[in-house]
Image 1 (cartoon, helix red, strand yellow):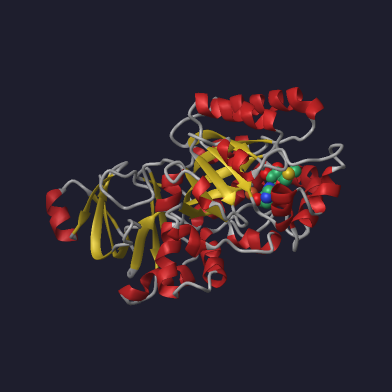
Image 2: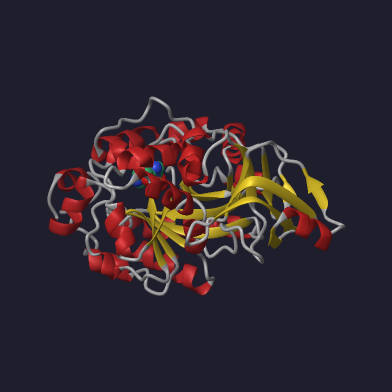
Length: 409
Ligand code: MCF
Ligand code: FE
């Protein structure tokens, strides 16, 4: 049992409560929050953990959307427009994947831990991230491992199913609290309905989380809504007489009753089609700036009562996997928000809301929650400024605790 105190504790609850000069008692779960002296008396056996002056304690961040297999990208992929990017991915994905050796993936995971991330939602396209993700999960990174399925060609359905099934089963062998196998349906334009329903049936039967890329770009939007735009000629390289596999409504309907993270949704207007209890939106602002030609209307999404959280996407469409960098980008993107209101919201979108999306008992400093939290050093600042100043200044954790255990970083 341990006790730790800080200048500020960001609870990351729904009201974004900040406790000042208080303490936290924890084992693998949080036992109590309150005044240091009182807790010291109540738990005399609790070992004291020292923190720097002016430190902040907050829940470990959850980066709900990464693509670690694309970690070797820096200047290879083409940014500015989605189809141009997609073509460059298709040309370079195998080369990039081969370059993203286990060592590089592990290095990026440790970098994320140092930036305060305790959980990732990793989209696995090839399965070459399995081994490093399993290893990282043994060193305190919680990984939700989304096995991706995609394919448009009718003649390759069986082959694709078997290849997906093998990757899924390989990942299921490692299932535990820290490594959570899951399913990713790549997108409505890239995944044949037979493949989508095959993978989603498995997800339903085995109660697996699901993630999907949805309405990310202008070209995808015109394609799905009107069967128009540049996707038509491009998709004719893969199929004769291409037609969208689904209407928007039909695609969303596939995920009925399934806990799903809909990534991007930049061009979604029909928010009411999503299930508020099971569906959430993963918002990747930096990636959208590079590929999507539009930003998510965050105000509208929040007003609709949808659960929305942050993700960085991969280095395939970002320059950093740190949610601190991503939050700073969000401060610049969402200019229609009052800055001092946006900062706490972004911190909730990196903690409480992704925990809800992934159905994990963490993401909040609260009695009974799993003790996944970080300690950061922060300069002297007023409470009313604390959330914003934290986002602007924080870079690396002083300490990171996952399930009550200090991570070696
Ligand atoms: O989220 C971004 C942009 N949207 C779609 N896909 C990806 C992103 N980053 C990496 N990807 C991967 C995706 O998982 O790129 C491939 C898939 O394997 C594109 S489809 C051949
Ligand atoms: Fe992605």
